[in-house]
Image (cartoon, rainbow, N blue to C red):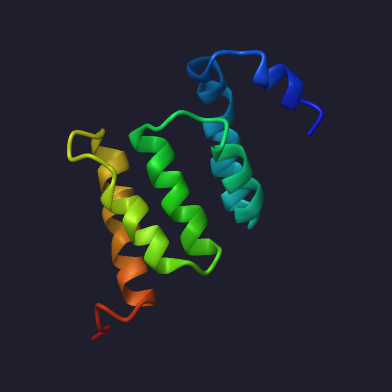
Length: 101
């Protein structure tokens, strides 16, 4: 919270370089609400869409997560695409669109 004024004073691209790793850390720490809050300060990008999908899935909103994962472009970096595909599968399982074997 104390960094909020400093982040708002920077351009969106500058904020993203700082916030994207922090958003991932918030998700890894089990705090999807914090991740979603911070995503409001980050411009749309493949990485941000992936993180939004992960945060929504962790928040128990698999249908919204599936839409976020679907918004990641096919031109995203390979690691982002791989994580997105995994997240999309997890979201589909969560909404029971894909049955587990």
